[in-house]
Length: 326
Ligand code: SAM
Ligand code: DTB
Ligand code: SF4
Image (cartoon, rainbow, N blue to C red; front, side, top):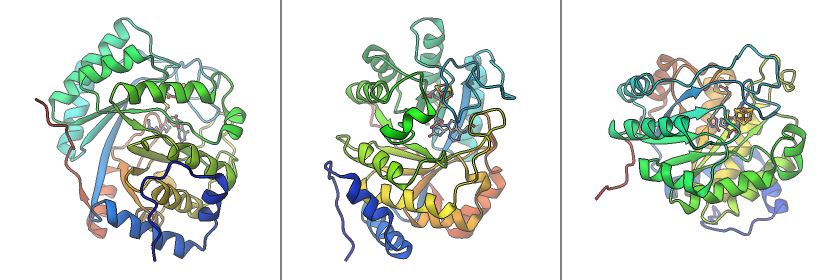
């Protein structure tokens, strides 16, 4: 019998690790069984990303090509004009995406013209009938509230790894800073999108501990992005060997079992996965992808390849889930 721990918030690392280490076919079977209880099995969410402010970031995240502390091919660029962002959002909607996510290479949001411009982007994207998401770094309660009032549906802010491993990757801000921003997002009534990265040199226990932190948030994050490290030349993690796709499958399956109602997103790293590995991730409970040729600064599969994959396996793009507006 599939075990269905719907809304537990008292997970231990030992329990999560025991799930992670189960025989793969049992784990995937159980994850798919739980998935089908809470989600439509033939639907996938397509989210399109756009970097609205690229590069020059003051943080030292070891994986990130946008950190000013790493010598990568990504330079500091100006913030995009609102019209250019809305043109990209219209194109994403026309291609079939239901959510549009805007990223900025900021440590934190600062009040002023740049934030005002983001609010305008949020209002504009929302008016196109898309779900709208942002990832802008740390936020205060007032900023989260302003984003909510502009129509923001979701905010992405990742914990990236376990509390223990986090310090190996980022030194310029702490785990508790991240949790504080997640609290501000939640208090403002914006959906929480929070996950991590695998393949940075962490072990199964770190992956289990990250999932425990996520699953013990009340309520669970509505979206859980699981990224495979995209190693970028010039970053400290450039030389990491590629993660075994089956580790990605296990991470997704355990996320699915621990947070049955959350949407688990197979996020960065799809360009280096075979179609078959991606299908296994879907079987393990992922039902969302980034759709568009570029993530923020690195390549993602071509639209044609993704369209073909979804057709071949019979998955249909989800429509935007917009809150009824009074
Ligand atoms: N600056 C904001 C922040 O850090 O919250 C928003 C943008 S940041 C690029 C969003 C997320 O992208 C990071 O938290 C990290 O999880 C993911 N990311 C960045 N570079 C990556 C890489 N090379 N491979 C996989 N994921 C990556
Ligand atoms: C998330 O978890 N993954 C996305 C999104 N949230 C913002 C970002 C992936 C970035 C990959 C590296 C790049 O393209 O710069
Ligand atoms: Fe800056 Fe975000 Fe990249 Fe970290 S992940 S360096 S905060 S853009």
